[in-house]
Length: 125
Image (cartoon, rainbow, N blue to C red; front, top):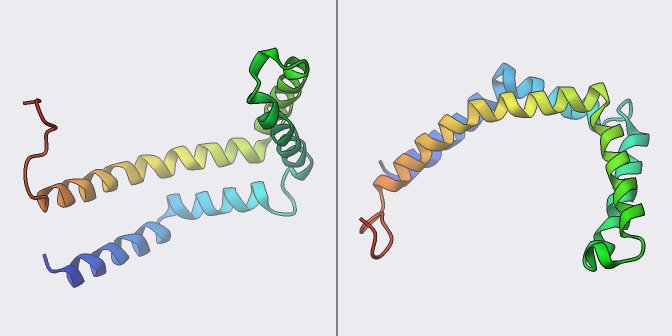
């Protein structure tokens, strides 16, 4: 396949994916989660808790605030994940990935066919 043909086929594949019902549902779920009508309070709480947790994580469980901050992050994450918008978003991601995984494998197989040399690492058969 010529490079131009490969590029055109890639763009056709992307257009087909974006027009598929699975991708449309994903986009709608993402908008519902991150849009103005989504669980903005839960997202803000989770974002703040994660921002407070990350610097303390460098010190680990030996930091005096580790347990409190980790508990706050877990509570914020649980609250966010319990919302209907997040459940819908997670289900949409799972469905979209189920469609994209075989496509990705097909692309990988095509690209592997273009490789020069062996496909195994040194010393392996």
